[in-house]
Length: 394
Length: 93
Image 1 (tube, each protein chain N blue to C red):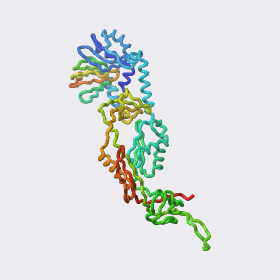
Image 2: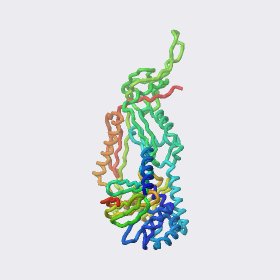
Image 3: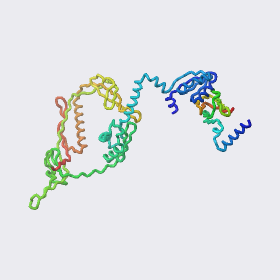
Image 4: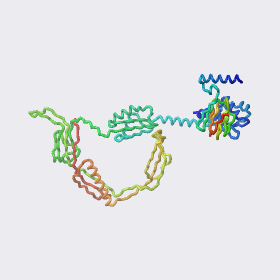
């Protein structure tokens, strides 16, 4: 603190020589002139004193017959005088500090920890709806309200904590590991309709009137189980119509057409090894590269981006590099065996995907044939699957 | 001479009865020492000598000499001064 006061008031270092420098010190003390950092070497006294006190020294010097030499000047008055000519530079520094202060009043980063089911994308969308996004004025953010809303919107969150540190918003959440019981949705009256062409293998109806039986051929969109049940009187006149939520297990055998072509000729990316790195910067949403992009005919771009900041004080400034890897396209051809293997692999993958969806493959007549420009796999796959899509009764 | 001695004695008695601090009543110097490297002095009259190895200070009753190495006055005001360096001896002359 004392040093700051000394700097603000400005001080000088002087050297006192002569017959009785001690007397000089004592007279200074009598005249309330503060001295500090007094050092002595070979009868030469060096000391610091305030600028204002320096001008009071004349009678003391005269009285003690000493000689005072000014060694150095320090502090704000001298500094300001020196920088008077560089007013614009100082103004620039001040503007820089001011803009840094202004920028620090906004939110520039959001970090989520502990989210498993709650992804960052979900969170950002939620925050956007709550008017919290990159660039929001921090004092506008009502942390308690956002916390409460977040808990209410996502009931699987058992604990939510929001805090702002620097220009960053930290969101910590804890999720409930156990699955929440699904709400029983009120069942609306509906029919069950076919989603594909095929043959009914079996049908077990729990609610509704079955309109098809095992062995029947159905077409896409046909009603399989009716949810509208007419109730007749004894004289076979219609008494009323009951509407139920049709429910049944319907197993359908259907055929799926399969066709894939693989031309012998194909293009392959061959990297030439030529590479160019260009610095890249982004300020808020405006981005620009700090250099010329290469003039390669074809190239891949790999962007590496970092956010600028010190500790928790993040700025809306991103920097990084763009790496351009040049490549050429080479025309190659598959031989017959390779093409056949590739098509087979493709077909196996397709079958696996079907099985993963719970569709049973009964048989297939897919054959791989050669045509003019390449190979093709063509045929049908016979599948067995549970069918029946709900269609609301109007 | 006798009169001044009597006056001094009376002064001392009064200050003892009123339990006044000695430095206030008799104008004695106050020397506070922190370790071997710092000394604060109050109630002095002035510096008589100031070198690397010795600092002599005039007080109301006597002179105090600080002997040591690399001695220097950190600050010097009308009320207080601070001596820094390796203090080896303090003599009352």
